[in-house]
Image (cartoon, rainbow, N blue to C red):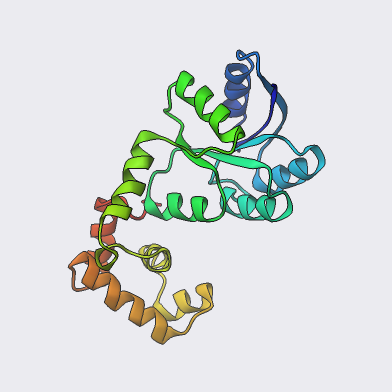
Length: 209
């Protein structure tokens, strides 16, 4: 069975390299490539591929936004993230939004091929380092693991946003933001925002921008 694939990445060299690599497999067909999430959504609706390879950081509409829109409109189309980012702040939202898997761009070709075949069948496909992080979150008690919302709050804080700015961006109250910080400090064992951001970066909970 041929697997029809759309490649989504904002770097032309990456798209070209992936196209050449994937076309070396007799069961892969690249039906289109997109340079941003907006284009990926449009192509997905018109072509309805078996699988979409999705980068995360892109202009116009990022990968996360594209995943949400495509999953809403085309729930049977599987989306496999292929990115350089491996922080909880990237992994968790992508998987929660409906991505069938999460790979890193240093994945060896044979592993990438197998992951694509698995994902096209609707099977979860995770890079080993990603699987380890996801498993670790499941093993750790919830009292010591930051929630997705707490990670969002901490990421915005790391970008220099005040409590009021964070509240506006997340459509929550400033009191709720303060409550999130209390829980964040407790879980990370720190006493202030700077220490929380430093610890989260060290543990790869959030990424350096």
